[in-house]
Image (tube, rainbow, N blue to C red; front, side, top):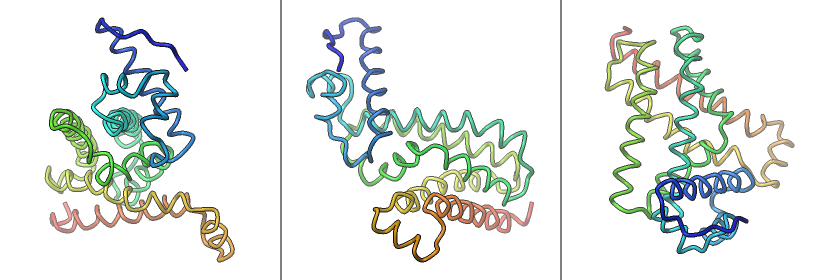
Length: 219
């Protein structure tokens, strides 16, 4: 716990925000998002809840900011792989995206909670900020994919970028089963949950690309 004086200068405000985000990331590495309360986050960072709310609109805004940072970091990692190392084949592109995302557990956790939880308790002002950042990140992923398949066009590439979030949001909860469910899956000889996540994401994204290419006339 850190004993903070009230931030008055812009640099101090920035430092407080960074401390809160760093702490949120540490806690998310330890437990699911649903188990992290604003009070626990405040206690861990060494601030009262009211002081945390001086820097962020809500608990949800903290984690949306973290989501944006994790999303940007993932794109920074994916871009050189997707643009320079992967052939222009739907399965190869889908596999590269799926494998890369599987290594970013916090991003997947946050994506799975974004629409149903995190976007439910933010102000209009912060929603504008977050959605603006989201749009830029989605456009960046779409541009990478369109570089491989120009025929799908801007709309098709944008649809694919959006489908990444939708499929991750649906699959990720199953990648973190309870101990009882994990035991039964092992007894049934099923692949491990992380393996199922990669397989499901790859297949879903590959099918998206194949469909978009077919609709564009195979170009």
